[in-house]
Amino acid sequence: MFLNTSIYNKYIIVRNWDKTLKKNIFVKDATSPAISIFKDESVFYPSYFPEDIKSRDKEIQELSYNLRPVSENRKARNLLLFGPPGTGKTLISKFVIKQLSEYTQKAKTIYINAIEDNTRFSVYSKLLSLYNSPLPRRGLGIDELIIRTKEEMNKFDFIPVVIIDEVDKLEKSEISTILYDLSRLEINNKYFALILITNHREFIFKLDPRVQSSLFLTEIEFKRYSPQELKDILKERIDYGLIPNAISEDLIGYITGYGAKNGGDARIAIDALYKSAKTAEKKGDIRIDKETIQNSVKLIDSVKLSEKLNFLESKEKEILGAIPEKGIESGSLYKLFSKDSDRTIRRYLDNLENIGLIKTTDNISQKGKTRKLELTFSKELLK
Image 1 (cartoon, rainbow, N blue to C red):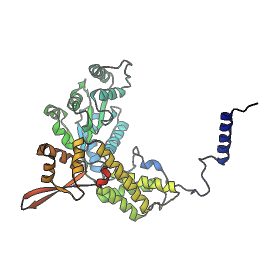
Image 2: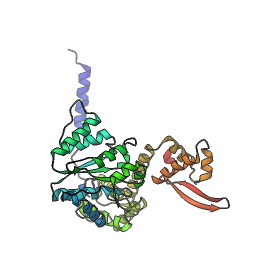
Image 3: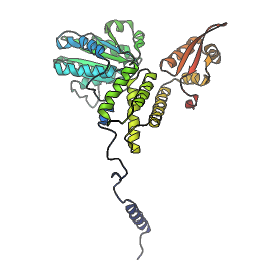
Image 4: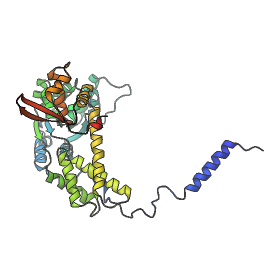
């Protein structure tokens, strides 16, 4: 009688694997700490709503004042929330809208992230979801979508409050049309109350003048958090999210400084704290040390740079590659790209500075006023 060798070999492998598995891989060993560094990990999630929103009382009051007419059957002004990343624009708008929805049934909200839904079709498809109006399998053309939206608006007795986050990321060829449509659409005293959120206020000036006029925006600026405000935000997350003494006061200051250096960005500071806590937990520690934070910061910087580089045009990458570690005078850079006009290169440089990849310093010499251009990161990361 012959034994099937393939079956026999599989049997041996399974038996050997079974011997090595002395216990379930998810069972912690005796050396694992009985206590986790986290008290409530959810306070570090992007979806977390703080019980006490720090340093944004003025913005909350202004936003709620401008939305109050919705609860009183009056027309609310459209709003533009602008400011650097991580300054609370999305958090505050969602907080105020949540309060409005709890106060009155006359408002319902739809949140649209223009990075994910950036076309006219996808925006209207999202709006229809507010009315629980499913699209037919065959789909609808854009004109049919608009007609369907008007029909649904007419059926319901509430004002749709539409938050469009990263509004400047709407498709360039359609952004003016989308915003004009939404600002003009009105049926039986029902209209869209718009909350537009952006890091770059100047996008408004690139819209068709008729759209700017039709939007009739009230602007609310969100300024960078100060170091003390960042520290207060971090301490609240630490109090709710970590066990006592999980991080020293000095290291809280270290993370605060990192957030302040990155434009007062609270999200970056919270992310650095969270990544550090996760790394400590993985190592079996119940205290965060400086080395762990430094490694977390390096990882965040690398990811941020990679994300920025991915969105650059090829010419912008060429310009970055042409700037040496020690920097370069603007005139010398223009000569390296003599086939392009100075105006074109200047436009690319302005964009690179706006997104934080280069910094410029004005120099006055015998040759007159020049600009020195320097990279804000190690050139090795471009390779």
